[in-house]
Amino acid sequence: MNLRKLILTENACYKVGKKITPKGIMVHSTGANNPYLRRYVGPDDGLLGVNQYNNHWNQDRPDGKQVCVHAFIGKLKDGSIATYQTLPWDHRGWHAGGSANDTHIGFEICEDGLTDASYFNTVYKEAVGLCVYLCKLYNLTEKDIIGHYEGYQRGIASNHGDPKNWFSKHGKNMETFRADVKSLLNEGAKSGETEKKKYYRVQIGAYSVKANAEAQLAKAKKAGFTDAFIKYD
Image (cartoon, rainbow, N blue to C red; front, side, top):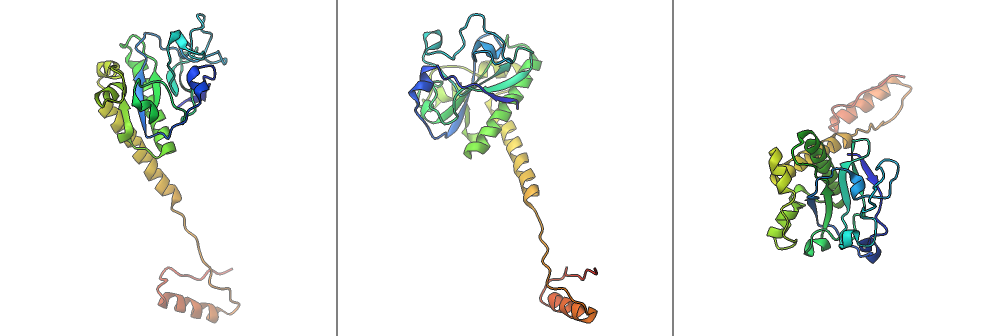
């Protein structure tokens, strides 16, 4: 994951300053044919590129709407893919159009024409990585991740079809997405277990007389320490 930060401090949502305790993650896609982050994130930090229309979301009410998400995933000016955090993760966003704003971190994946499999697969992978990162950060699981349309089905979000409208064109859905997040979380857990497995040796004593050392070794083995040994220095 290529995670960067540009907080939308001029957005009215940020200025309200309300905090939440994240209980879940909501996945959105923008619904517009523009994969470039500069459309939504600004001003240019040297990597985003200049938004010639200055209609990014770092303003009070972008396009006259009360909208703001925690992150965007899309293209930098050089065509590479990045994630930009645009609100503190525990800030109440304006992304769900319902009560999920009080509980969920929301991020947008920048749509293109919906037919470029290479672009889709790259941003899909980036989105999975972001969710793994957030799950670890807030002790969440893949079960706590929903799409905007699923939020609507649960009565906690407005009536939108994203990201199902895009995912389905490339053989993906929120079930496969959650499965991919779960797989990475499990890999991380196994890796962590391996890293945490350490061994510490305990020395019972040091002897100048070999017979005394051998006697102590015999005592240790009798006590159940079958892997005890004598090291000669």
